[in-house]
Length: 586
Image (tube, rainbow, N blue to C red; front, side, top):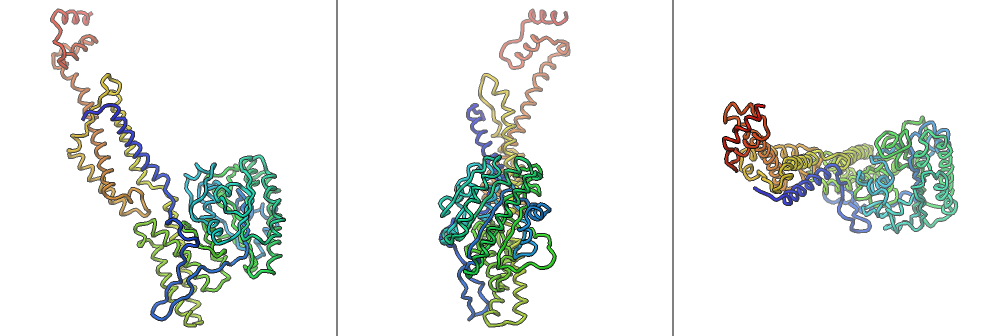
């Protein structure tokens, strides 16, 4: 089949685009997504139905909030050892005292790469795991359209105030009743960027017209970028943050006597910093950040201080949603941090865990075709059934030890199911789709090789190419390759633990891609064989004319032999041949 150079180039360009698209789809996996948000408050599943007729639970609404006011203090680039290590004891004495002897819970929150500000804010507020593609838009953060805690709070009538990094203002436009954004590009500014946040505190803490206060401090991050984590400037900045936390905590405690519900202070970091002060990667210093929950609702800590438990950064969105009496974000893959609600009754704790499990199982259903075979989904259904049995005993007025033991068992089942569900959903975002990447790479390399084989023809005067596809389509090799590739596709797609994009395509589409790969490979092999055959034919014909031709090395004689081979001109006359032989002899 003959093709003009323009047609061949256009076809190769389209095939290259196809290969690159499949490769990038595997290299940048899309985050798991739920259906678009519909109602303002979302769906609230009822408690699991007790077995048997006659008993029905009457708890069908979202539980009420646990805290009256919530203050989130996000300190940019706050590493876990800045709070729990020697620096924390030296420069943050009030925070250390609250951790060791106060009413608080301490955790180490693990952030997933990329550890830059905008994707981390998304993870904190949506509970989802942003990918590396979010780094591209980190410098120009568009409005966040996914379901998130800020949107749910605003829809529920919560009044939100924000001061700090203006990334929040870009992500959540028109969500704050009051805000003051600071830019993060002047990394040499260590003081004013934080003073512009703190100057609002005295006035805001005296007011009662807000429900959620968010503060984002950038000074520590700027110090890390310029001088590193071991700089002498880190200590004074940590001491400044400690005084701010002290002021907020004391102010919240002073107003709790007037209110029926306690307040909650959350201290966290969006990411840490490496030993050189940078961030964005996956080193321990970059992904481990402190997460503190401080409230009078918690029991006072007693006994020796233990190592903080490791949780996921995405767990904050689910925990705060329960604390504020809001629906959990539909795209969240986080788990409820149980100690925060550990002071509630067993029925309330089971209700919170069931809401979290229902949201995760619904997200799994909408993103995984074979969700019923997922271990986390199976564990959740078992826990849900046990929960129904517990509710039946509870509604019957059973207050024996059997009820308490069954409740603890259901609690454990829910926690195991939530952990497995979250892990299954996180793998779809955090892992590369190697199969799709390999398919895209094969198509790209085949097209490149086809172009390389066409270069000699492209340099000739005739811009036409002989594409040997037609014979190969009917060759045994083509059908054999199609059969092998289809067998590989079936094996990979039936044994893959995580969802592959290429496996999610219809079988007809996948078969078309396999036929394309086979046709390109057969065409390449046919073209290579033709080139080798053409390179050998002239030598054989010239050598068959007589043994004396091996002695002739003249370019002129080679030209005559070439012309004689293709039959375009008659052979040279004997007189000319004798002259050429004489020149060759000299």
